[in-house]
Image 1 (cartoon, rainbow, N blue to C red):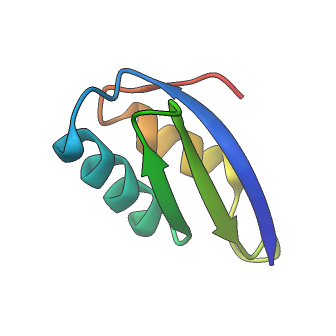
Image 2: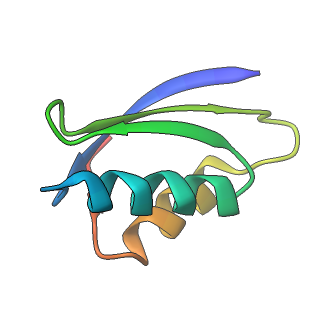
Image 3: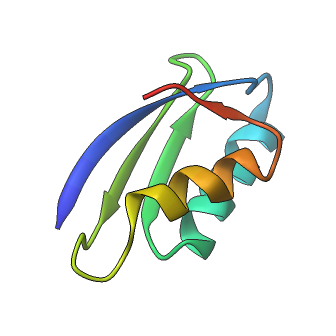
Amino acid sequence: MKKIELKIEGMTCAHCERTVEEAIREAGAVGKASRANGSATVTYDENTVDLQKIREAIEENGYSVKS
């Protein structure tokens, strides 16, 4: 399992955090978003989940992934 922190722009409320976390889950990973930090900590199996798919899932919901 790999654990990374993604910088995410556009989260302003608890709903935003839940939306980002759900997008991460749908991409096959586990994540905890924090609007206060402007980031999400993501844990995933790099053998089965593509990091780019996680980024795309977040961006499809209207947020910008910066790292």
